[in-house]
Image (cartoon, rainbow, N blue to C red; front, side, top):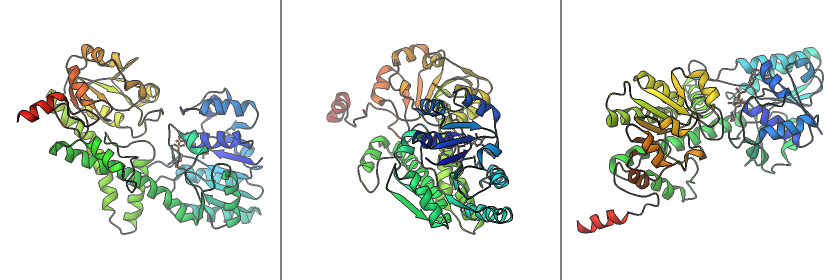
Amino acid sequence: MRRITVLGVGYVGLVTAACFADLGNQVICLDVIEEKIAKLKRGELPIYEPGLEEMVQRNAAAGRLVFTTDYAQAIPKAEFIFVAVGTPSGVDGEADLKYIRTAVESIARHLDGYTVIVNRSTVPVGTGDSTAQTLIERGKKQGVDFQVVSNPEFTREGSAVYDFLNPDRVVLGSVDAEAAEAVAELYRVFTKNIMITDLRTAEMIKYASNAFLAMKISFVNEIASICEKLGADVKLVAQGMGADQRIGAAFLNAGLGFGGSCFPKDVKALTYMAEVNGLHPQLLRAVMDINRDQRRRVIVQLRELLGNLRGKTIGLLGLSFKPNTDDIREAAAIDLAHMLANEGANLRAYDPVAMENAQRVLDGVKFCGDAYQVAAGADAMILITEWNEFKQLDMPRVYDAMAHKVFLDGRNVYDPAEMRAHGFEYRGIGRPLSGTTTDSGRQTTEEMATASVK
Ligand SMILES: NC(=O)c1ccc[n+]([C@@H]2O[C@H](COP(=O)([O-])OP(=O)(O)OC[C@H]3O[C@@H](n4cnc5c(N)ncnc54)[C@H](O)[C@@H]3O)[C@@H](O)[C@H]2O)c1
């Protein structure tokens, strides 16, 4: 049993805290937002993450997971302090470290004995070194010794609990081998694949990993645009590429592009780090440009199909940046809602869990109780987030409810042949603009007949 404090009860902090408590450790969770802590004390979660609520409630009931806003309670007895506060984008794309600085200052004020400070937030390369320096100087004055370990976070929202318990690898960076080893011991129960590096390398592994995954998405989206022009089907192209073990199938789904609190912010921050060091990170810039264009292409397509969008009713299916989360940060749906509102369109929307968050940032959108209500009177529907409950919709019912029958499938969830057979003017991303090609790639009997006559 170790005594662990986690700073920040967001998507990263709460999962980290609950998973360590579940192993029998004594964990204190601290956040500066009183409302979040009050909710947690009542057994309610401030975020949606599958499997987390039960784990938090069970460990809180056992007394292993405690919530507070009081640094004086959370810091002094901790052996490990995990920092999981936000690092949003600053004005030029750089990571804004204001929350990290405040957290480090508060830690420094309350430390009273040897502690390992573990940074789980994504921070610019070099932050660990400067944090360590600040803390070590403060510590010397207070007669307290501490060490800093960088421990980048690789879990995915929507499956964060599973990912935490089953990591592909754990990366630890530190100047102090003993401190890194102490943190490694906390994780050994989950994996033997623990990599210990210096601080800067650990911080860079995080940025390079996210930039690479974002690049895969933008790559396949660029291929999708070319496929559309040349009449190839990107879904099958990606399947053919992904079967090659050197490439891998993950993150090769063409669609409306990436969002969320990490990829856009981290690619921008890495670009900024490269630029201030005199480099020209062209690939990273292209990754972001392609991602932005994926959203714009929707507007272009809708104009093609419906003409002027002023007064047209557009239905949005899904608001979170991906399924199984309520996180709407940098979500395609939010970008599209703003763009469509600028075009003068009327918007209707539904999401299984992200409506409350979306209502805070979207004005003038009619929020509906389900996909069929969204379809009522709509000129076009856009599938934006591939929640399971959208995968087997009663399409004849959707069709009947709509005023015009335009359906943009922003995640290539539906079978083009089936959708066209229902009567929709269907468009996927990077898929042939007409015809009856099925998801299996086989031509339909009708197509084969026409082809053989020719
Ligand atoms: N969300 C993810 O899936 C994910 C994945 C990998 C890495 N990360 C990184 O982890 C970090 C946290 O991300 P998140 O999504 O959990 O953020 P979040 O915004 O959901 O949560 C951050 C929390 O920190 C709290 N906070 C701010 N200042 C504080 C302080 N001084 N003391 C204590 N708490 C404070 C905030 O109130 C908030 O509740 C970021 O650097 C992010 O880039 C996130």
